[in-house]
Length: 104
Image 1 (cartoon, rainbow, N blue to C red):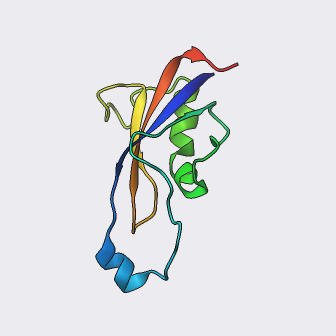
Image 2 (spheres, one colour):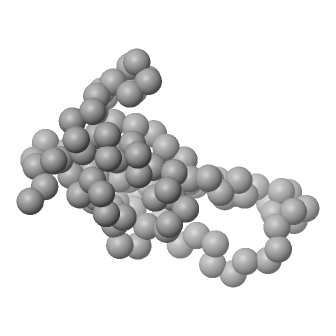
């Protein structure tokens, strides 16, 4: 099984939607662009929020088990995926890539 590197690539924030629909939240997301996590394929990395993990875990699992060309060649790198968390107010885009070395 391969490890997967998960990199926070972009963070968005929709203040108009937050103001109109969301109850106030003090710490909705503590991630930073460029932040990196490493997953062993089945366990959520420490510091990664549950919601983001739920959005990406199936892709991490597939890539860590040798999956390639997800969605018929969607990604230039066949052993990667670009996934966003499901927060409609502050979506975060994650680049997931299988690493060459196997997890222990």
